[in-house]
Image (cartoon, rainbow, N blue to C red; front, side, top):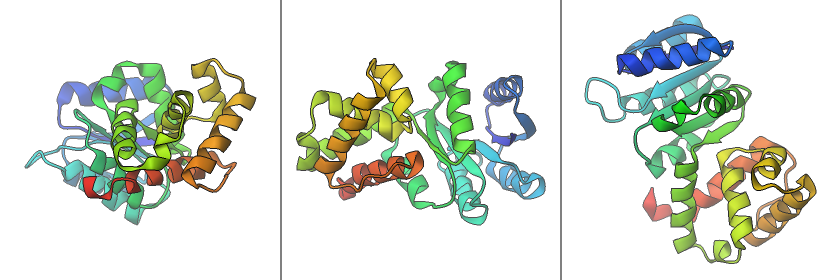
Length: 221
C-alpha cells in the first residue's frame, strides 16, 4: 500500500509516517504543504493520500482543495483528510468530489493506532471512513431538520451512525454486541424509514446514508 502524506506540523507528519510504515505501508513521501503534496502525487502515483486540511500559506483549506483536486484527477487514489475540528462541509465536499474511497478523521483519532490504520486501509480499498464526531454532528443537525430521522429508535440511530462512519455489518454487530442478523434487520428498517434503496454493497450503502444526512439540512453546508 503506497501512500503520500501532507502535514505541516513536523512531529505529526513524522508520527503519521512512522505509524503507517510500522503497519506495512510504503510511505513514498511526506511533505509540508499542498503544492508539494500534489507534486508528489503526480510523481509517485500512490494508492492513498493522507493530508491535513489546513496547510501553508494561509492555513485555511489548502489541504482540502488539494485533496479534492486529487480525487477529481486521480479517482483511483483514496484520500483521507485530517483536521483539528469538525466541519460538516468538509465531509460534504469530499462526498461530492467523486472518485474512489475517502475519509475525514479528527487528529486526536490518530492516537488510536489500530483504528486509524484500519480506517486508512478501508479508504485505500475504496471504502469510506468518517470520524465518529463528524457523524455525530451530521446526525444531530439532520435530526433537527428531517422528520424521517425522528422515526428511528435510539438503537437504529446508533446503527445509522456506525453505517455513516463506514462500518460493515460485522463491525457494527461487534461494537453494539448484536448478531449480524439483528444489524441487517436494523439497517432494513432504517432504509424503509429514510426511503433509501436497499444495497448489499457496503460502500454504496455508506454513501447513500451520508448523502441523506447531508441533504437533510442543505442550508448547513
